[in-house]
Image (cartoon, rainbow, N blue to C red):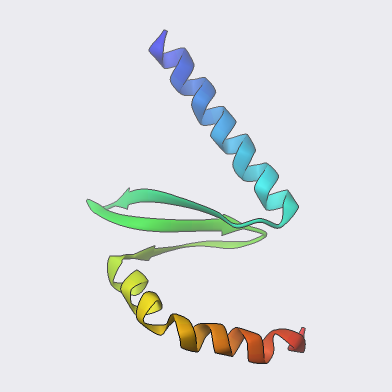
Length: 76
């Protein structure tokens, strides 16, 4: 019975991710890669992952990143 529920849960998660991608939303999931925690980003773009070190760099740099996006967002 658990196997059937696990399969259903996995299928529901896959469908939720696909719906979010179609809507243009970003899906962020916490995963383990080679024994280390990572955040995986997927959506209407090429999926990518960030480990702890890169996440820490982003957090330290968030104000600069925000300014950059605000400055160049009108370019598209």
